[in-house]
Structures are given as C-alpha cells and as structure tokens.
Image 1 (cartoon, helix red, strand yellow):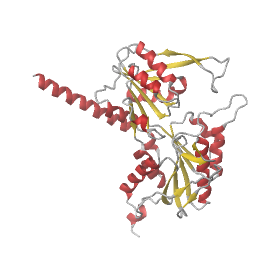
Image 2: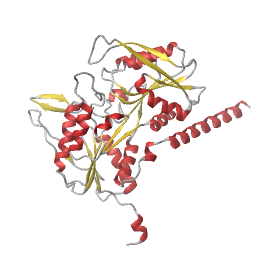
Image 3: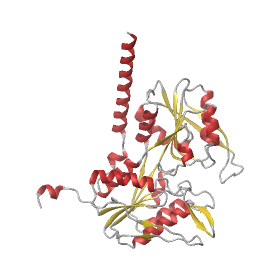
Image 4: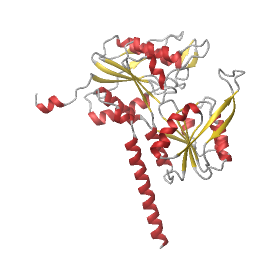
Length: 389
C-alpha cells in the first residue's frame, strides 16, 4: 500500500442509509447526492431495503431485507408525517409521532447489533416541545433520547431543536443540533432577488423570548436590527395543554418601511405568527417573510390563505425536513427550503468521522451569499443607469 493510500481517510463502516416510512423523497435525494460524490457499486446506491408492515390489530414489526453487518447506518425518520397510514380493524389510521417512533426502535432492534454504528437523523425532535418538567408531568424528550442510547444509537442529528439543552439527558453520545440559517437565506435570495439585506432595509424579529437566540444569530451575522415580541399569557387557566396567550407585546426599534424576517422553529397552528404579522403591518413595515424550520400547519391552511389575501404577510419559508402536503406546496405564499444536500454532507462527514465544525458554522457561506447579492444589485443599478443614459 502506498503512502498516499495510507493517508486517505477510512470510513467508520460501509455506508448504509435507511429511510423510514414517509421519508422516501428525502432519502432518494440524499442517496443521489452521495452516489454522485462517491459512486456506488450497488444499483440502489447506499439505500438499505427495509419494511415496517402492520398486523390487522395495528401491531407492527420491522424487517431489514439485506445484510447490515459492519455498516455505518444512518436512519432518517420524519416523526410528523401524518400522510402515512396503516390499516387497523379495517380502518385507515394516520401514523402518529408515537407510531413513527416505535417503527424506529423496531428497525434498530432488527439490526440485531450487527451494524458497526447506528446514527439517527431525526430532523424535528420527537417530543422536543415536552423538554422540561413543570409540576407532575412526563419528561418525554429526555426519556426518548435515553431509550435510543440504550438501544445502541451513537449519534443523534436533529435540526433547530426547540430546546437544545435536552442533550443533557444523553451526555455520553453524540448529539448534533443543526440550524438551517444559510439555506433559509439562500432560499429568500432566490425567491426575492430584489431584497436589500442591510440595516437600513431589513430587520429580524423573534416572535417570543424562547426564539431570541436564533434571531440574535441572524442579526449578528447580517448586522441587522433585532426586535422581539413577548407573550402575555393567562396563567390562571390551561387550554389545549398550555396557558392561553392574551397578547403579543413588541420590544424593539422603529420598523417603518423595513422588510421584516420573522424567525421561529415551528409553525404549529400559526396563530401567533399571524397575530404578530398583523401587529407588524400596523407598524407600517414593508414585506413580511416568515422563516420556520418546520411548517406543521396543524389547523390547516385556511387562516394563512385569508391572511395572505388580506396582505398580512408576503412569504412563508419552511424546510422539507418534515411532511408537506401537496396542498401546501401549491400555495402562492409558500416557498420550500431544500435540505437534502446538507443532510448528505452531514452523512458524508460523519461516515468518515470528520469534524462537523465547518458544517455547523455557516458564517463564511452566508457572507459569500450576501456579497453575491450585493454584486447583483450593483450590476442591476449599472444596467439601469446605462439604459437611462
């Protein structure tokens, strides 16, 4: 073996990608990227053939239809794909997050300890919003993470965790919390090429105090004005498992005439985002762009359709990390942020046990994107000046 060959990095194990129910599109795109970069002797690339059938009672099992001995397995799962169904007692039942999690544990069990290493890519963390205990409550997210550790999982990769401190429950295994900041900005520039991202034209707004950290990152890297709304809640009663919001109060500078980027991790019902958008309109802002890593739209799309028709916001950007129904993709106000290439980069990096630091810190890529945007504006201005002359 030559000296050059000895210097080449060796993978942890043969790469294998397992796509859970509902992740077929994402896994296919990730597999295409990896096959393009590496090549593959297998016609299916790096995908592992698995199945999670159900009995008539709703009970399930998992089957891995090829050997995974010595593999470095990356299991990609979408815990919130309600578009998947199974038959139980003759009824079509949509899969809940609990169903998806049980299928995940079954796949890990089916590997039977034969894989070299097991990594779980869980974009939206299962039970991530049940991350702390108040009074007599279950601590579901911590229990879930510890269960995966006990099953032999060595790395958990998630995106924009509601509270990344949940990793304290599993301090001895890998936990990567990745923010799609660069991809969101790249999509914004693609969809709105005329936007001027500077302190005079754009402000970043956090919808609550919990999301302030991710907004501080945007405002610091882009050198933009930062504002925040805080939620006044009625702590005397509980509705739908939480204290209802009485109002949103704004803290920050003057926003008149500025485009606004409203950043959150999740759009669930969307009520908070739309209420804040209405208040921002009253402050005479320019365009309103909503960034959310996960667009769940639990209460449907009607409210957003009505708000868009009323001019309350201009665009909603969410990633393809969770299930998006076709009806959402068809909306004129919706823009999708593709994360498949980034997931492929994460898998490629971890398979060779390389540092994740560069992937986790996109400052350089963001600055290059802003430079390209500014150059395009300058070129457009020069062209306009010549045509006027």
